[in-house]
Image 1 (cartoon, rainbow over the protein chains, first blue to last red):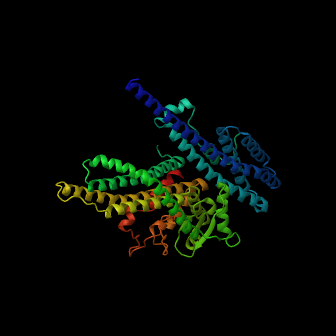
Image 2: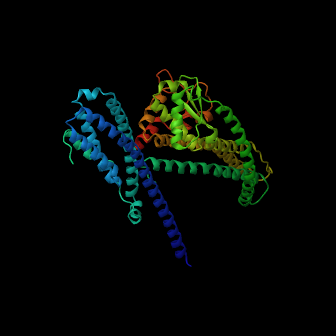
Image 3: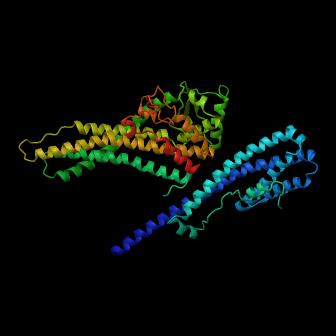
Length: 187
Length: 320
């Protein structure tokens, strides 16, 4: 047992301890991101619950908007059924844009705009939108923290080995596109 | 580790708090070694170094139980004072539903018991948390803060104070204050101790100078380093409380605007003591001079209980 062997053992022990530390911090950051997404989910579920009531209220006044209302309902189902975070992000953006279109079109129906139920739903949905924005920002910060920790040395060497991959942000992407063409909804 | 967000900031500050805390017993050990050296140097021994090492080790071993007893007594004493401050009866839900609901909502989201809510009748804006356990905790707001901040900003401040309670920061500060007391007592003793040496020994002049040097270093350690460490720890905990508020409220914008408002008028006239000042969300000491600039004394700069406001806001903007 020469000095060289002892040094080697010490080095290996240090490397193992560092690897454990890196794995644990990356795992914690990933869990933080997952939880941040659940918090968005809580808000989104509240929104899903309000939409059937909204669709029925609008149906009574905007009899010619059958297709639009069907799109909203369809988008809602797709968003509720989405699986992974990436799928959910895409479906959510689609659903949001249908809702925006619905409210834009409602401007053409003054009777609808005066309806108490409609006004209350609009205000509740607006409140939830703000909460979702805040939750999305928090989620994006958690994603940024996770990604930033993944790519620096020496974490990047171990990240691939342990199966940590760069994560996606909750992007405005599709929503931005739909806002520029208010009446056309793609399906 | 690189600070790139909320969680890494929290980990970083926690690690630094622990390292700073460990400095306290190290300082005590150093002072004991100095004391041993002085006694050894003043005696007639031929082996100054060897005897110093022996007596240092004996001194350190003996001091451990003594310090433990000191801690128990001082902790009980501080607990009594803090219990007087927290007060049994706080604001009830019917008396002030707005503020009660703000506090209760945050507590529910974290599974914390609702602390007793106190109000100081002062028009300045400030708040502090007190209490050694989450069960016996209290949060105190000034009337000025409740009047001049929006509900969202009050919520952010409440998040900051609740984080202090959750992180047991008050307990940590009591421990720091006790350590500082111990260190100052030992340093004071070192300053006062006089050791004789046979006057016809030709080394006495040089050794006397060395002893003087040791006393000066002990003075610096006891009356500067120790307090500097205490306030460094306090500043780290403030950063952590800010981060905790963002964790609780999921946004940093409200805390940033609350801090900016508070910083314009945080001075609570009743508070003069630096140890109490460190418990507030912003430094309540000092005042404003003719130009409207904050009066910051020399010692305030050295021993700031709170990090500078622009540093706090910068940290918040990074994670928010």
